[in-house]
Structure formats: C-alpha cells, structure tokens
Length: 253
Image (tube, rainbow, N blue to C red):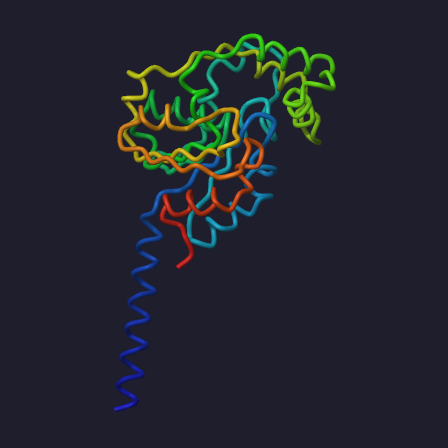
C-alpha cells in the first residue's frame, strides 16, 4: 500500500512538472525598456527585476533605447524622432509582454498605439498625466539648458537629470539630443487603439503623475499608486515589483 501511494505521488509530481514546462513554454517573452538616462543593465538587472522574471521561468529581452546603454548615441535630435524603431527591430515575431519605465513606457505605449498586435500585456511605470498633456516648455527648456551647461543650485530636478546624464557609460550630448526631440501628447483616439491588457504603476510623489488621467483613457487598464514613491525610485520599489509580477503572472508560487 505504501509503495502504491509513493508511486502515485511521484506520478502526480511528474505530471505537474510537465504541465509547468508546457505552460512556461507558451508564456510570452518579457521585453524590458528603461527610462531616459538609464539602460537595461542599470535599470532592470541591477534592481533584481530580471532575476525575478527568470526565476518565474520567463524569457527576458532587454532593449537599450537609442542614445542609451549599448545602443548607438547620435547627437542629432532628429535621429530620435521614432524611438520605437529600435524596439521593433529586436522583437520576435510572436507577441510579447512588455514593461517600460518613463521614456521606455512612453515608447512602448506608442508601439501599442501604432501596432497593437505586437504586445500581449503592457506595464507602464512612471508615466501618467505627462503622457496626455503638452510639455511644459519653460520647464523643459530649463532641463536642456542644465544639460548643456550646469543647473542652478535651486533647481533640484535639473540637477537630478544632470546626475543621470553623467553616470558611467552615458553620453550627455546624446541624452540632450533625446531631450530635444519633438514629442506630441497622446490623444484620446490614439489611446483608444490600445488593445492589450495594461497596467499603469506610478508613485504618488512622481512629477509625471497622477496616473488616473492616463489609465482612465485606456480601456480596461488597471492603475496602481505607489505610496511615498517618487519618479526615480519607481523601479526599485517592492510595490512596483509585486504589481508588475502579479500582472504578468510571474509571482513566485
């Protein structure tokens, strides 16, 4: 009797193992796209987010935006007119899940609008109201002037952007060119074309927020607000980890 029970248990475990292998095999790869001044390595691998996805059996595709990380770094703002091009070149033929932060989130959102079939699930971190409103030209110009020279002691935001631009491996002139690119806010009609399940995650201290004006315009999207989190802390926050991994079906079992 005990031998039969042991054999039955082993069979059930083997069946579960095979089922898990099948399920992992059909899960979509996860594309990760960083924000301005970051890279796949500095944003996603250093935080441990890549390891968590891989531990859940997911294939990770890391992409450095043009002007960042290992990508080419042209100094002409016109070179950055279509940041989705570099992402499209690196996508497999089958749909993927995608997670983007800040500039990476805006770029993935543009891809979801223009080519809805490419994404299966979409996580937008660190964007909200800023995606649907025109850029504050005065504030934007101060950032550019700070990048081209040096920020004033009173302008904390510009100083933070300069610090990011001067991190090892970055090219400040290329990142300034990215900042100078032309960008239009997303319209309601455009956001209405987003067809994949979408999660918006944003800190309640993020200058890009709040998230509701964006989330409410994407049909069926979910909004998670991170308490006490500012823009730059988003991708290191455990609340972001939990929300994104749960949404992607990649929480540890």
